Length: 252
Ligand code: MN
Picture 1: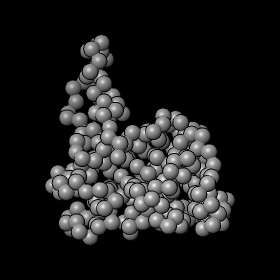
Picture 2: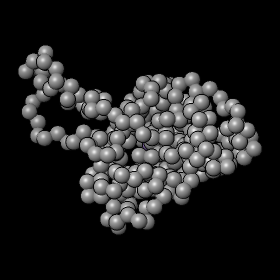
Picture 3: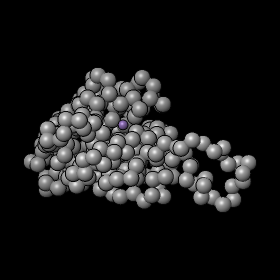
Picture 4: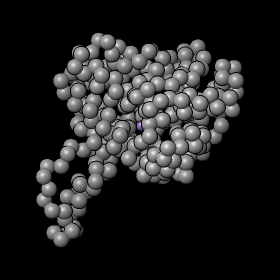
């Protein structure tokens, strides 16, 4: 997991910290004294919001900068902040690998089980999601391409089946390609923030079909978003994830 500096964390928080830190601001420009501001999106604690590995506009025109900004800073940030709140009363959450917690939700106290399922699932899903996207992501090759050909009928068939599963996921959810330790691939859709990690599986790649992932640009046209999304997939990173899955070292 990549840790994040405080400076980066607060950069997107409505300029609040930056404003107070700038000596040149005049009183006339300063915002009126406001009631206590809500806590920044990623509250203090063991869970960290991983920085985007590229600029927010790097995936344009397929995913616009504003969507990326809100999606990463606000939506993913909220899942992280909620987990840090849970960790205040259940500190073991911060001391256990994320994939281990998700595979053993039954062991959690009743009062936080659903919240952890939703928010830690969201944290895991989005951490994967940012990682497997990027500009100029190339094409699949080598072992991962061979697995796509063998298990999913080739790249075009895989995309079609994946898009169909994503479009067919009623309401909010995700669509994934899962990978076993033997390197076998399968397509799976889940509701809400449920993740194959809950069933001890590993994710090769996945797409977010919550409306917050595409609504600004695509409105209700989820199928168009699913189709365009393949333009921003980072196949080099996915190749690395495939190798890690076979080595037993793939986590989120
Ligand atoms: Mn999302």
